[in-house]
Image (cartoon, rainbow, N blue to C red; front, side, top):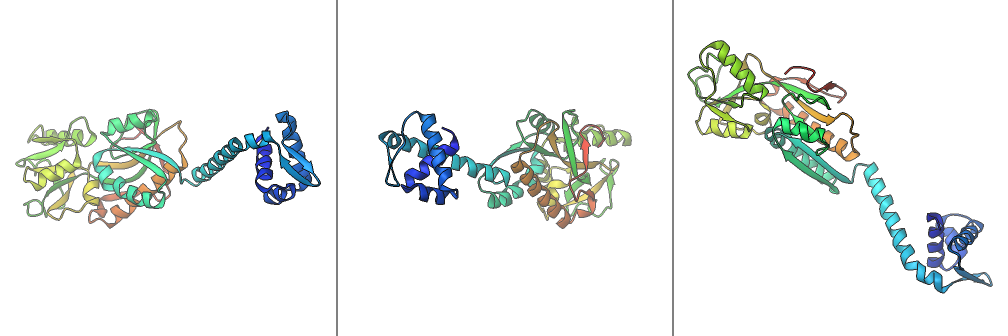
Length: 322
C-alpha cells in the first residue's frame, strides 16, 4: 500500500463513508473506490464490506488502523517540518567567532533572532580566529565571523566592514586628545596588545621595531575584553581592533587611531563547497543587521571605511592582505 492509499483508508475509517471521505480529501467518490480497491489488492485481504451503499471495516482493517494513524501523524509532522525548514523556522545553526566579535555582535543578534525564530537551535563557539576557520572548513560550524584574515584555501569570505586599529586609553590620558598616535608617542607607555602570531600583533610590533624605541609589548592578551579591562584597571594602553568598543560603550575610555593604519576587515566566512541552510542564511542576516546598526550608531563610526550593503561582495580568504 502506498501513502495515498493509506490516506484514503484512514479517511474512510474516520468518516465511515466513501462519500464523506471523498469530500474530506476533495476528490471524487470513484477515485476513493479505486484507491480502496488497489489498497485491498496490495494488502491481499478485504478492508471493507459494502452493504447497501455503506462500508463496514473488516477485523483486519481495525487491526491496521492504529499503525496507519501513527504513519499519517508522522507524515503530517514531516510536512510541517518541511514548511518550517523552507521558511527558515526550524533546524539548528552553529556559528564560530572570536570573543570580541561574539560579545559585540553575535550576542545581540541571537537575542533578536531567538524572539523571531524560537524553533531554531543556536550554538556559539568562541575561539581564536585560526580555530574559527578550521571549524568552518571542517563543517563543525555553519559559518564564522572574524576580523582578521584567515589563510584557509577552503573558505570564502564576505567582507562586511573595515575599521582601523586604535589605541585605547583612559579618557584623561595625556594622549587622549590626539588625532592619532604612533609607536614613538607610545614609547614611554606600558603597551597591551595581542600575540605576535595575530595580524594586529604582528603589525604593531613591526611598527615598534621601525620606530626603534622598543621591540615588544608589555602585556600580551588574546581577548579584546581582557584588553579593555586592563586599560580601565590602569595596566597600560592597548592597541586593538575597535569592534568591541564600538558595540559596548565604556565612558572611561577613548580610542585614538593608531598609525601606521592597521585595517581590520570584519567578515563572514563559509566553507566553499558546503551549501548554506536557510536557517543559517537567516541568522547571518540578523548578525549583519546588528553590525550595521551598532557600527553606524557608535562614536567610532568614522573609523568604518567600508560597509557592505547588499551582501554581494565575495572575496577568497587569504587572497588579499589585511
